[in-house]
Length: 608
Image 1 (cartoon, one colour):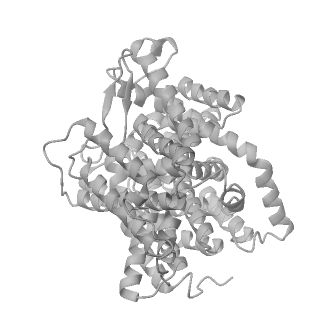
Image 2 (cartoon, rainbow, N blue to C red; image 1 turned 90 degrees about the vertical axis):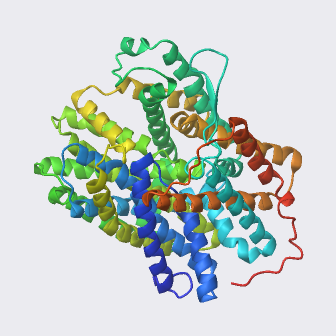
Image 3 (spheres, rainbow, N blue to C red; image 1 turned 180 degrees about the vertical axis):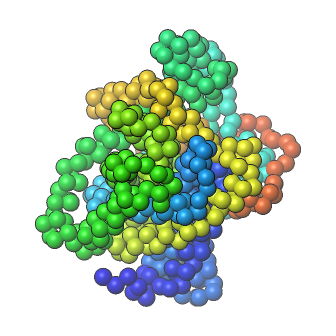
């Protein structure tokens, strides 16, 4: 199979994509360590690529721009996996080593891409109606807009401009509008309602529809309007069920951090694994077909021979040379580590890809699934007499990076599926993006580590600090196992009721404001489908532009933050303004022609 074809894959596309993968990766390492989140890079990379090729090169294609965003977005995802876990290893007493970080990022990233290969047809094509991949569809809409005429272009541009303006006005930008308005409900201690005033969340809710949005809100309601008020009203319940909590229970956010996060993590892990079990016959069938065909797989995918060979080499390197990854252990322990890395990576790659298919990569609860990985690993390791927290955390790091890359890969493959790209070229492109980012992510981490340290005021590294405390608690037997088990049974309960537990579990794990804002978009979609009955494509174009505008601005604000530049003003507008902005965003998506009149019949087609 020829990789460079002159249309879909070109040298200029690869060079531009590699540069962007490095830049986005560096920016997101800082962002992950500073506030515990990253900014999706797929749509910004696509927009930058389209702008550069259209102005400088004068000629480009959808497929070439799609390859740029495929390779470039790997940097952002890799940064998330590394920044959430590697600092935890250092906080446990390890010494920073660039080569170990490079090998860890490369191995985990490659596993994330490779294990998506046998799952691609099932998740991306066969389950097209069940897994909408909202951000993948939005990216495809942005790429396709020029070929649909100026009407489509203007709608995407209008959405981008609105997304930029709103993102600049909220916290992190000028700060005029409170991004997280919250109101206490008159039902007693602990009852609140909150929103996240970001256009991308409303847009995602509109794209995924009312049902999935409502299920996410149901999970959030269970957590924030049942569990949190219960513990806030009666904190003595902690001691009665044997839960050891760090710190005092002073407000609902402490309850969320100490209680709901672990219940949600247990629910996400259990529901994700149940989803994999339900689709296991289809997965086995597709792999069996590939094996019967001589391991060639689909003609459109990487050969399963290649997948198996590289995955085996990674497992072998972990088993035979654990010092490459920064640890020195006995041979039987390194073999056990390798086995856990491969098995858990494949399992959670499937879970992560399904979650991204429901709510997009920006809302992918990677840290929750990493917590589940750490729990599973520690339970087995402690039983066999291995009580070194670093070995457990190392497995968590591999799996976390694999999950992050798998989520990005599945989203990119969905975009490629919608625009007619060749999967095997995208899969190779993802591997190139992982390699390029792995070479530089260690340097970014090292410079920040030397400048500020991890867990400091400048770089709080929230995920890493939480995972360090959790792993040490797991190994010593002081972890909140009961809360994780409660989450598992919550997921089982919804599955027994005949409901898909995964979106409910995601809502339970994520902050309330995210699910509330997604629900605003889902409600807008319900009104649109049942009463307005307008042109869904026009609304989707506006929604895609909103996601793109917010993502682009997020990257710019991240660069400013790294440079120490703050745009924030002293005074905020009342919280009611935040709510008005949120409703306005929903109305803009529902009535796109009020912003840009529809002119499909008269719009000239733009040739690529």
